[in-house]
Amino acid sequence: MTPEGLVFDAAIAGAGPAGAACASVLARAGWRVLLADASVEPGARIGENLPPSVFHLLAELGLRDAVRADGHRACPGGWSCWGGGRAEASDTLRHLQGDGLQLDRVRFDARLRSSAVQAGVQLRPATHLQIDQPAAGRQPHLLRARPASGAAERLGTRWFIDATGRSATGASRLGARRERHDTLIAFHQRLESAGHGDCDRDRDGRTWIEAVEDGWWYSVLLPGGERVVSFLGDADLVDRRALLTGDGLWRKLQATAHLRALCTGHGYRPAAPAQGADACSSELDRAAGHHWLAVGDAALAFDPLSSKGIGNALYTGLCAARAILAHDGGDAQATARYASHLRAIHHAYRTQLAAVYAQERRWTGKPFWARRHAQAPSGREPRPSPAAATLA
Image 1: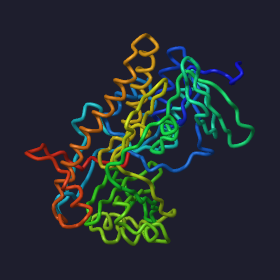
Image 2 (image 1 turned 120 degrees about the vertical axis):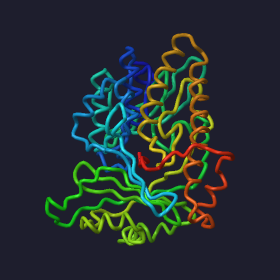
Image 3 (image 1 turned 45 degrees about the horizontal axis):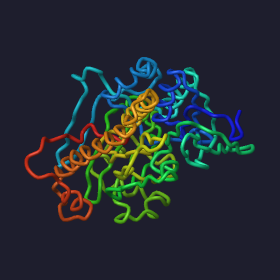
Image 4 (image 1 turned 90 degrees about the horizontal axis):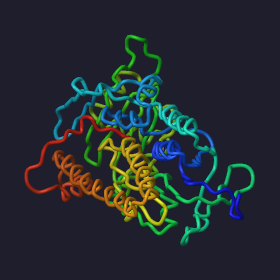
């Protein structure tokens, strides 16, 4: 114990997939790791899909088989109405990893945190971790751990990892700046079926995507039998109050063709109030600095159409841990390379995303689509399909 409090090798603010993955790797290397989970109790999450391509990251954490056995719903592919009125389907039949998963996010996140604790991580639930004083010279970062109940504790850490999501509160305190590339926002709602018999029960585990004139819709069937629907549009072009009040989002859904038919056929009705969430493409101008890094959405965040959310969280968590270990092993440029690598990833992603949006030409004069068509790459590009996209 020092005058500044207990000194950890690494302290991580945020116990989602990115923070938990980073914590596990560092703890297995023998580090003293603090993982602070700011949430008081687990709540519903809209990131529900785990693509087959992400299973190799779970394998690196030793969790692929455990996650597969946790009761998540298999996702055999996607369905989209994009680029025309005709529907298009994709499947995972030939994928080496098999089907993806529609996740119970509370269960999935708990699995990752449990694995971190088993590796030796000290997990502090319901605790906000904030930078009190950045590291200077050889001194550790000084932090304040503020539990939901009880007195705040001052402590020190050699490394600080920001896994606080799109807010990136720790990295911002350390001088990083978030760059937003659009104004996309998601409005989502849980639906329940109104008493249909087993023969009429919804069993479509695919991810549904449907473009409309002012944005696009997404839907998945949850492991518990509920269905999530989400509308994605630009924050300055939609009436947020109307969509978040009463049945506003549900009424907007009635203007769709295919998704409305799906919901009507299974007797769905809203089961919870609509909620809103930031869904823009954004990144930090630097994801690493003097003995600190950002991971997951705190470092770089993606349009939900890309289906990169959970994969990005796990990947950046693993990469950040390796960069920190390499730096401590004498590679002084390891964390700078990590930050440069993330910038390159986001640049390539924005080019690919623009190519997907460019496929939809039915509403070229509408502001939402005109903005995205203006960003379309020149020349001939491969046709990535949005059929497998999901809000991850």
